[in-house]
Image (cartoon, rainbow, N blue to C red; front, side, top):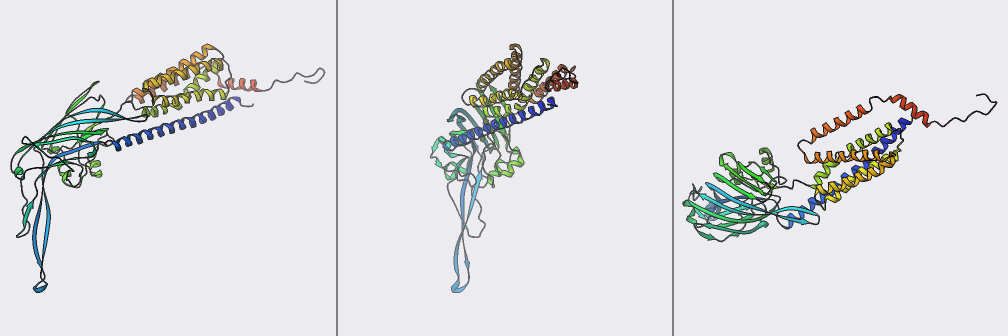
Length: 471
């Protein structure tokens, strides 16, 4: 072979391409399993209840203006009865909510979803309606009003487990539906007709089930919410963050205080806006995005799982090529220093062992904690590479060095996965250190002389000339 070094590099390039295809196949498998998890979560939400958002209480009184008009003249004259629906809306002058959410995990096969049961104690103080009865717009019209209703709207009414409404110490019958135009799901109760002319207080007890997140709309002149939970990894979202919060290993508590001057929740609730859950259960929407989606402003918390195995597997796979290249560099340095010849197929087998690590990690993390799955997969692959390296590199010591290097790579990768905020700087420093080590280790190598030696070694040995013949 005329250029053995170049041929070796081309062969290694082909090996790396094959390993890239393998890593891409594992990456596709991670995406498929992640999609299966989302389908399982949606299946649980469809059977139980989805992400919850709570609007209210709101006080409404529906009235009709009735009048008559005449058309034509003489014997063609006729009387037409007409009507117009009017709705008077009032919001609490002070809204105080004390909520406690208890996590109730739900499972669909291998997949887990964070469900919860939330007990809401809602106390709302009301001022008299400014216009207890709308004025007529037509001469001689008659105004007929129904009994005022107290309503609470929910994004998913299937989650209602128990509800009670008390006004002035008396319990009122709770009826299904909120009767609100843009948020019809929920519950309501009919109030005495004269209630709108007096200051009064309502006390509401609402036990609610849901999944992934819970949110409230700040519809009071002053809205105060106190939320406690046994979940230790809250993700506060929506249009307002809590003013006070305490998070510990046993759970969290948070308090919000929102003034009507700081939110458009009441105005948009009376318009065409809909009651939306927190986006993705965790993320807050900007004001412009909320307007584009036509959503009422809310705030709340998402019960996220900080150690999502599929997310961590996906992040680990992003470093797969780096693993392969660094391991090949280590094997190549040993090959150069000991004047060995490692076949490209042996490089390919080493690369496949590194690829199988990610497949093992994915499959094990579906059954055990990610940290334990990572430990088992890394120990298995490190042991395999140590054993195989001792034969490929012709010695136990080089095999142990290869295994130690791979083990350090696994340790560095785990640190990268745990330090999401500092992953970029840590990865950059690791690459710099490896590059510096390779440059220092190869600083005295004469690459031209090595290429010439490899070429001479690859040429077939010349047969000695027969006696009496010219050389």
